[in-house]
Length: 523
Image: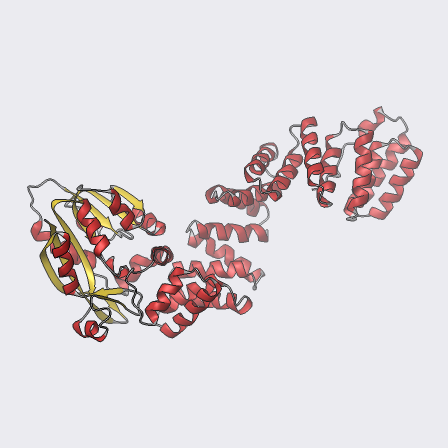
């Protein structure tokens, strides 16, 4: 920022010509009134009378800068600094002019000299921070913005700069109060409204983000970033039609916006609009060929079964997006019963005189099993691939520890420490179950119990696809497993089936989904 409000009264100590001083003051006043041509003529007149009048030379450089003639600005500001190198403001403004013509190292030198001369120079700290930000030196930039705000706590531009810097450093929580400070002073600051809305969206504070980004959309109806994040917010709040409209508006302007295709496809899949879901997943994969989630769901929607199951990226992305509306959706729309069914299944094996069990809940999600198993759990450990699901589970409480981790990775690290392992509606994201069953066997104590659910692959389905008689990927993106496959695994991996029952475990498109609930014992 160019700084033109200088105290020039001290030139009296250097030049006793009162008329010269008055002309300089008048020229600065003209410049401040945007009468730059007139100010230039007056500054030149002063310089012709007093060639070493540093403030006049500086003012002439500043006037050219205001006219965006930065090469001339540099020329005269250099001369001003040479005439009187002790004025911090001269160095600061020369730094600005150098920055404008791309001479970054020279700009840096003069900002630092301005601060050497005047350590409490808030604007120079802000300008140096801005330059460091441009160079990608975000930690150093943040330090100068912080120093600037300690000197001038109400500097709106510096608050905005520091907030943007924190975003680059992935310090979203730290950015929020600085964007809020900008909006408090300038409620219509579009950049702060936009960036704060997106930041709050990233922090999952959707209710706070929504009005900010709606205001941005009102003022900038074609703002793609705002529209996309509004889609994310409405999706998280389970306002799916609003989310769809936001994504469609993005795609009307930017047809190759891969994330919008992907999120739109996921909503259509939830709505059982499978043809539309397939179209948008195919577009998402075309735009981003490494999108494993889209590839998996394209396979599912085309009826192709993969032995390795759903990729980790798919499961994580699905539940990160789904986390904040998950509980209400599965309870109110899917009539999801698996946690209750598992607790009922294990009830006959509970000995009231025994010590409370150490229980592992793999794929724990938002923690729906926790309250049901609390009475028999001394320590309940939860593991899930989705950070957002774990965040919700932590807020609900009931767990001794929670881990954001791939299930197989977690199981590989433990041995003989758990009395019970729970897997509620987890294996629908696995094809072959050999590795996960072996991992659960590894972490269970001798005689430990393993209770889980599967979606039931019916005999007709199994025979209809002889290449995949044990498990198949359904168009819902979920795997179903045949009971004979589970029986073979228990025999080969060292389990005994203690309990097995077919149940309606949830609903899909208002139709019951049949599953099996098991309790196995480690031998």
